Image 1 (spheres, helix red, strand yellow):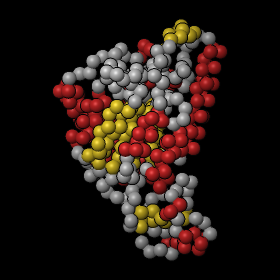
Image 2: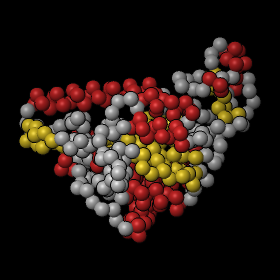
Image 3: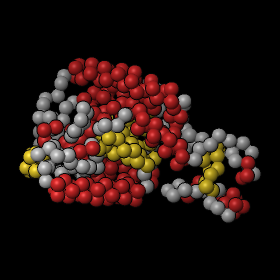
Image 4: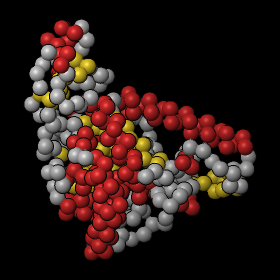
Length: 338
């Protein structure tokens, strides 16, 4: 596996900082994000944060044509028969819903070829989304995979509201990777993302909006539990990536290391044939990954380490708005008054 594996970018194991230190770091990070990202989004979203969460309210808000992956229980059969085209009902969103972050903290997310790692992008995204949602009365919770140096779901943060909940989530994320495993725990091996998704199926009882944040560098078999999770919850796959995982520049002789198994290999990036093979394998993996996500029926947001976080969130909000087809007022040609 040669994706996201340049060992020079993976920090050595370290002991977690004291809780007080992590609390100070979390507060400083959240304040910076509130000033640089959230403040900017406030002026651009204009209250459209609701498109981040798909509600299940009872008040009819709109009618639109049926789209792939819509819930068939929401089909309006009278309108469908009249127009000879399937239409579904769109309901007013519940205002107090729960959002859950399923966070993949396996060693491969410590990779980054630029100024930030995939882990930094994960922290920023989780903090910004959690703060945007929690301050509007929604509850946020999290499940962390691989955060204690082992391939397992090791932390569950129950869903609560408020800024303190976001700070608590950030404190959990700031602890460095490579923390020694607890006594008796198995060491980290290849990522088993399916384990995180199955754990979420058993933990999340109430319908929620679920953000699965991962680079999806995992053993196969995660697409089926992801699809099962999406049948009950509104699931968004947030895919972390780095440009160097898609194409290799000419760097000469480079030692690459699999961040999860520790396997090392000396490669000659001066070899044009090797770079072409790498790009071909990367393109094949990209196609397979996108096919698996489409098969699971989830919305997808791609976050690169060289992305602007605010721009990426705005692109996603626009996608959700178009996918949900939410409009103000009911269309006159359906014969329904607003």
